Image (cartoon, rainbow, N blue to C red; front, top):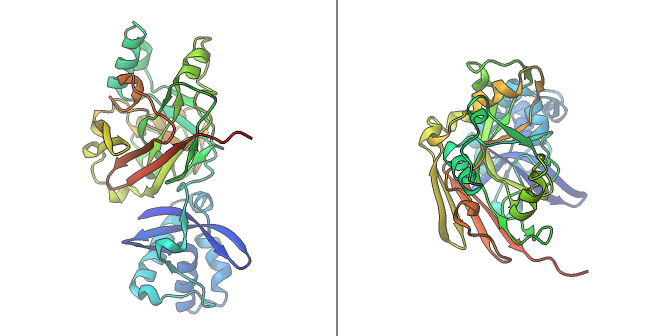
Length: 329
């Protein structure tokens, strides 16, 4: 499934809900479950649906594999019914794109860890500092903890941050944890992945390197925004991660091209490392780090106000964001 979070406007307010894409339509998974239960003659289908397939992405992930399996059943049931599918009380089940606004697939991850897992990228950035790759990098996957409360989604504007003069994009893929665990083995770790999405770890390089000169960080140089989207693709939709081509375009021009298969530290290795002696939770977001050649830093080429940045990894899709200059107060 290609899972999304979307916002709908109703006469009684605005609501964020979880759905799944089907062609150019979107299925509300919670409402699809309610319809399926009603067709099975459950006495209180809507109430039961809230327990089995919750209405938001994080709650769905917290339900673990059983909730995801029931969501898939509900999705298939709604697809079989077609656009005529309605909820138990006549509610909308299938939406057209113009009826909703897509958000970050997981707008509120409980944590964000971003790794530096591609050897080509760390080699290039180390060379810029006149240094070799630190030998410690080969001993375990290294990451920093980002700001999980500044997530932005597809087609969302990024206000120009912190008066930086070197705003950069970073072409990454991310996995989202789908079940709780601790001391997870590398062999079992793939079973903890709920899905994959595209991630743009926006960076203010001048600010980042100033703070990291103090042997801490990054912090303010990255914490202003991280973009993810446009959807969360379940693992069964991607049989070969290594074959995925990663592209970055700025104003339609290709700036970066890479392949996920060049990664040195795999997502299962990251999960095994992070979970050693500490728990991981549903919704935890793990960024792969930048693919080789996947940022402006490696080319001494940076973003400007008005630029449109598109990161593409199929079959996930295209994550598009526009950089805008904030108006003075």
